[in-house]
Length: 84
Image (cartoon, rainbow, N blue to C red):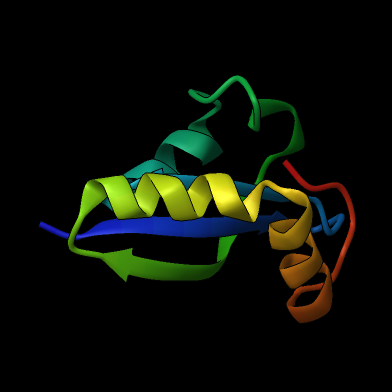
């Protein structure tokens, strides 16, 4: 089974980082307002994702993407605004 780390983006340039085993279902949950952290800034689209076969590695990479150096990567490679 694949596990994905993803970056969502909305029309204002806000970004959200998460992980899931089903990107389409998770995006639907974000856009339906089922996720507290993102429901006030809908709609979202997938800006970027990366797949891992190991869930622990996906979770570790998600955590990294939320650190200072991970945020620097996102700032450099994706339009910056509010990052979660």
